[in-house]
Image (cartoon, rainbow, N blue to C red; front, side, top):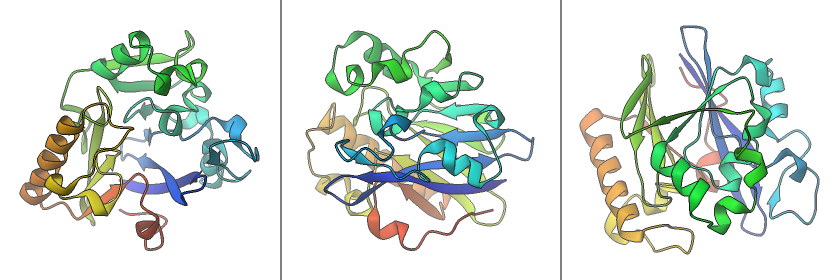
Length: 231
């Protein structure tokens, strides 16, 4: 099993990376965790996310010798536009999302979902809705971490050499918010107290499982030290 962190651009004005992850599973399946912003944002100086021509998800896959058709599963941590903005580029993959997230996205009318709805709400996409903790493949486990969004999920990947790695998504977007008591409230959080509780449960998982590394979704400092791959 090999894990590749992918930088899919930057939050404009904040310098925060937009993170995705590709997992090469020993079964031969490729698993993509999040897809970043819409590819149409690439090179657009007015877009809220800075995406270079070599940074969008299809370009990053191409750099690894892959195409969208080589991706078997896309795990959507949640359906915010900087995480699910390019789901429409993967019509042949199984898109795995928490049921609560998909239902909220389809029915709540919230701007976070409606703004880029065309990119995630398409009849061409094949969704698999799950409820809570789920094993997707051997060594790839979904962890319910709701709070930032109605049905946010994180991903635990058990690498043979590195050890367990937690892809936290926006449940713990930077290392600075690992302390649930000190986790600041955010206008982007669906439920602040639930987000803090998910942070608390994830940090308990880190301790119990001996997790070697937490991958944060928007941590500029972490990106300076990340390797191109982990196994």
